[in-house]
Amino acid sequence: MHTPFTPLATVPVDRRTARVHEEGWQSWSPSGAYALGDTPHRPTNANWATVCYRPGVTVAAGAFQGEGLLALDPGDGSPARLWAAADPQHSVPSIRVTVQGDHVEVAADGPVKLLTGTSVQSVLADWADGLGVPAPRPAPTVWCSWYEYFTDVTEDDIHENLRAMDTLDLPIDVVQIDDGYQSALGDWLTLSGRFRSREGIADAIRARGRRAGIWTAPFLVDPGSELAAGRPDWLVRDADGTPLHAGVNWGHDLYVLDTTHPQAAAYLVEVFTTLRTEGYDYFKVDFLYAGALDGVRHSGADALTAYREGITLIRQAIGEEAYLLGCGAPILPSIGLFDAMRVSADTAPYRRPQADDYSQPGQDAAEFTGVGRQWQHGRLWINDPDCLMARPAVETRERWAAHVEATGGLMASSDRLLALDEWGVETTRRLLTGVDAC
Image (cartoon, rainbow, N blue to C red):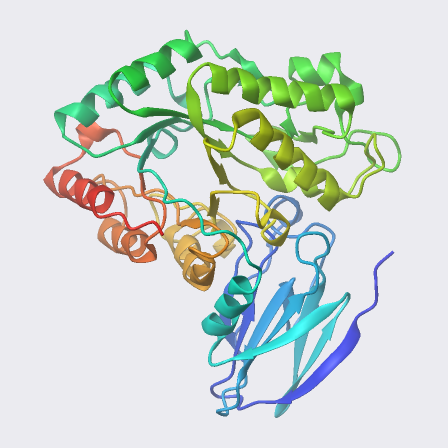
């Protein structure tokens, strides 16, 4: 049952200059500041509402809404105001602003506290500083297979680029294998036909003086996977007892692993312990929103408790010294759990996202939310603005590279390195060399 909104404040504003910052639910949810006359970014279809926004939460037309955080600069010289979740890691209320002539009405559906500051970004930064999160470790530099090869990546592609790093003298610390090495979502330890040996690749990477990294989506299960067929009791359920639907991606439905089930939890630990033992010490965990979806779990735990417990299991399996990057993750419930965090939608070789939905891949979408969440960098984690793509086929590659560089966050290349032209090689080398990730 939906909790009603409780009025919090009436604030006079200058309609011409006031700005409202909406904080989105998860990594890919649009976040940033708007003028009062702007139309905020909203989901353009029901699937993206589940996969990229806060499921089950809609916003009335004409209203602004932040999930756990909403900041207002009244534009009249008075202090910026921030309404923030009272217990952000465990309870994330929606906070809403509606414009009423020369003032705005603020309301929330859960406990919040009020802070003031000199600007929207500064008051958000002050709030983050007040949480007392330990300073994050500097991020390594990374090469990632995703934006060149996507799910078609092969073991030979990894080896080719590993050799190219030496040929081109690129200062890459981590070689990260992305989606495509596994046979199915959920069957993480079974290889696809394009790969021969996970451990062998890790050994080859480390033999060249680099670190081995790997991608997983640990809370997702493909309905066609061996896990879903063999252990249906490991899945989070809907109220009617059917497997909870976590949206559609890669052209098929998605289910959710119930990490509160003791055997499913043991399997999750086995996956990450195995990968760590094989030599991987950089882990990108993706599509994490699934672990925070409301559903019926074995332990009866609420979704956010189950989510944090699931990430804690992963951290315990990989050890404190391994590097953990989150993506597609609920932002506030993730505080204190990660070394680095994706803070925007995916980038793409093009600017405009599909259907102009700013949760979808596109440089415009990634820049909008990346700028809006710059206050998180160095306070909650190292910000990941998403990968540099410097090959000639990338639209406005100069502008995208400038954005990645300006964030000062995690620097990752994602091109077929031997296909880069002179500008691409020099830009990649410069950004990786000049990284200042904390």
